[in-house]
Length: 151
Image (tube, rainbow, N blue to C red):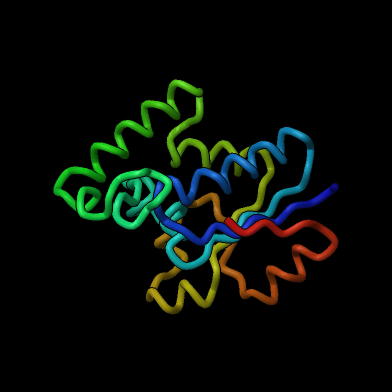
């Protein structure tokens, strides 16, 4: 495999990390990587939000926490803190550092034009590392000949 294009669509901590881990692993193997951030996944490249991503504790069956408990004040902050500690112990960097590291490794980062327009965002809302804001058609042309992964 020479190329992988990864779609990041979720803006929670546990929604962003899988795409970044896949991208990092691919770059470490010398594989070309395109990361396409859409809908709430754009929070991972939004200057105002990417340092403050939280674990979604309500309606997240993987946590094993009843929805009512997940909605208690402070529960998301507590679970986020626990997850960040575990990620740090595994030497997985925080989202801002990880995104920069992946971009510096040669991966290309893009925001979805339709989502940017829907949320009334502009290029200035995003981190400097993104290559641009592209359409879905642009993404498919870029991904041609490679594998597409949706996270």
